[in-house]
Structures are given as C-alpha cells and as structure tokens.
Length: 266
Length: 266
Image (tube, rainbow over all chains, first blue to last red; front, side, top):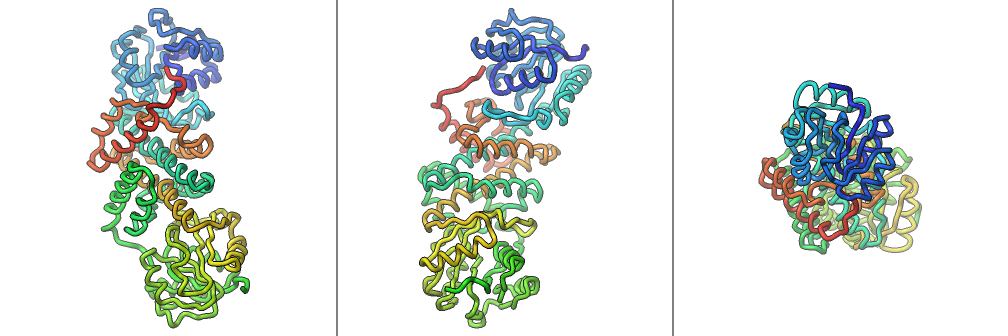
C-alpha cells in the first residue's frame, strides 16, 4: 500500500473543513472537496487548492490515496451506497459507526476518529487532538498510523466497540457538560451576573476531577444531602425541565454518597 | 466599627479550615476554632496558633472582631440560637442562607460567600477566588469589603436573592458537571481507557463555552438530532438512571436546537 499523499474529503461540515485545512497545511494534496452544497464545496476547495465536487459520486476521482468521509452518521449510510474506490483507503470520522460500513466501497477501509468538539468559530491545534484509528487489515492500520502520526502526537488503535464507548463517555464529558453551562449562564443572565464570574470555579472543578478523580472531588448540596437547599434551588428554577434535571441529578448524587463514610465536617 | 484583626472560626470543615489557614497566613489573629469534633478543632487550632473550643458557645470569646460561621446550612440554624456576640460582626459563608439568620446573634451581620468548590485534598490561591458579600448595614459592608480585599482580588456586594441564584448557577456549572465526569470516567474505566484521554476535550469544551458562549458551542448527537447514535448510546449504558439522564439531557438539547437555523453541514 502506498504512503498517503493525496486526499479526497467528503463532507464540508466542521470536521471535514477542519481536516481539509489542517492536512493542506501539513503538505498533503487535497484532490477534492465533496459536498451536497455547491458553494460550501467551492469555497473550501479554493482555500485548499482542490477541486469542488457537488455530491455526484461518479465524478469523484479514483486516484486519491485516502478518502475521508466526515458527514452525519445517517448520511454515511447514503455515501456508502454510492462510493466505490476499489482498493483505496476510505475512512469515516464517526465515534459510533463501525469501520465496516465501507466494506463494499473498498477492500481497504477504516476509521479516523478525532476526540475533540470542533466548531467553526474556533481554531485548534491538531497536534494535541487524540486520534483513534480502526482498520480493516494490517496494511491499512500501518498506513493510517503513519498518516495520523504526521499531524498529531496522540494516535491509538481502537476497536469499534471501545470507540463507541469512548464516544459515549465524550458525550457526557463534553456535550452534556456544555449544556449544563448553558443553563448556568441563563441563570446568571437573569440576574445580570457576568457568566465569567463562574470561570475560576469551572476551571477548578474540571482540574480537580482529573487530578483527584470525579468521585472524590464531588461537592455541593446533593452530596451533603442538604434538602433545604435542594428544595430552594428547585423552586428558584423557572422551567419544569430544569427542575426535573436538577432533581434527577441531585437524587443520583445523593444515592451515590449517602452510604459513603464521611471525612471531616463540623 | 474597628478594622477586622481578630477572628473566630466556627466550623472546621473544608471552607472553615481553608479560611482559617489562609487568614492566618495573611497575618490575621485566629482567636479560636470552634468545632463539634474536639480533635479537628484542636489540630486546626494548633496550626493557626489559636484556641480550640468544642462547640460550647458560652466559652467563645466575645472580643473577636469577626466570627466566620462555616457549617452546613442546617447547622447554621443551631448555631444562630446559641451564638451571641453583641455588636461584633458575624458572617456565614453559605450561598443560599439569607444574611439575617444572624440578626439575633449580633447587630452587625452579613455573608462572605466564596465562589469555589473547596476540598481538603487541594490547595487554592485565595487571591483568585471571587468573594460575594452581603451586609446588615453600611459599616459592616465597609468593614467586610476592606477585609475581603486584603486577601482576594475579586469582591462583589450581592443581595441574598442574587447570591441564591449565583449558588444555583454554580451547582449546575460545578457540582453537576463533576457528576457527569464521574459517569464518563466509569465508562472509560469499563473499557480500560485512560480517563486522561478526555482532558483535552473537556478543557476545550469549557474554554469554548466561556469564549463563544455555551449556546453557540453545543455539539454532539443530541444537537444534530442523530437518533441512531442516541439510541445506541442509551443501549450501551448499564444503569437505568444513566439511561434516564442521557435521554432527558438529549431531549432538552434537541428541543433547544431543532428550530434553530442551521449553519453549514454536508
């Protein structure tokens, strides 16, 4: 199997655009950008000096070394039907899809999953993003490993099953925590308190969770079983769903800690 | 009202111990440490060169300039009955209790609420912790303000109502996010994946929430309305409560974003 030098990117969403730009910067030749939305494909293709292809799979060149499919999981199921690249390597970037969704598209397939929450408004150091690879055979594994190590310091081989659990853990650690901050900011906004006041607290909470472990670093009224505060907080929340979420989380935390031996307290 | 120089600390839990040590380091005279648990009081008192008092309120000296009560909210209700310090300043450190719980203990009372999650196993730079003060009158406000500014860069006056909402926002941003990390770590542990692999993701998620705002920085299957992944994730979760929490959060996120205009996607 040849070393990966030329790349087709299918999907010009956050991850596809990010990968196209970063790989271009690292010296890879971006052959094509494929997107259902012509303008998006065109703009990104110009930026990385590639060709734009509007979702017509018969027009995709057969001579890229690697095809990176970065589309929603439901769209992967469409792409797999239309994409045929014979023995070239095709990968997707999804946490949850098995590698073999592309087994009819090529004899050489795999996954290249970046563990990061990527949005357009931010810049990222690709070197610091852990990439998890899965491959249909040893040659693909070797090629993807060499490829990934050319742009990031953190590459790990992983099975489909473990990657799915990793993605699940990431949803709790990133997507759901972000949503809790959304609620938190709404409460601050209502009181005209600057959301940034919470930054030192959030930073410390996260650092302590990784340094001490989140089980040992839990604090707050639910852990203490302080029903007065819990009831007061629920009454202060406007939306019924927020009340429900507060109750559920507090119950879970309380259950977790009520039988644990206490350390010091007054 | 005299400048605050001498202090009695009531409660030797995480916050009380932290305040005693930090104020001692800043040159304040810690008269007494009061705790129901004799040994705890004794150890902390020795450390800050004060006297230990075992929860006998008639033995507490009347001549400290400031009495800091750092006990669970339910214990505050006991302390208030027993504590009488005439016109000396008495404050608690609770986010949720009104200032006036101590109005029978002294003519001068207030609150000194540190916005940080404090556990014994960690060290903190008190200078970077925001302190929120509430006071029964202008003299107390002035005294507490001068006092707090002697050890932290961030002091804000706040009403009882706003402080309660701030505390509520902090529970979402700190206690509940920590609990989500606890679940996340369990999932990683089950797969023998190192929890630290998630650190760059969590760091970026939090930074982006503060820089872009959490509403704009949401990502993930729930935001995309990716039901296949959501169903798969729920099936991967072991405990019923985790399934329930995953569903609730995903529903809430999906409701939030389903009617928002989309930016780019494939």
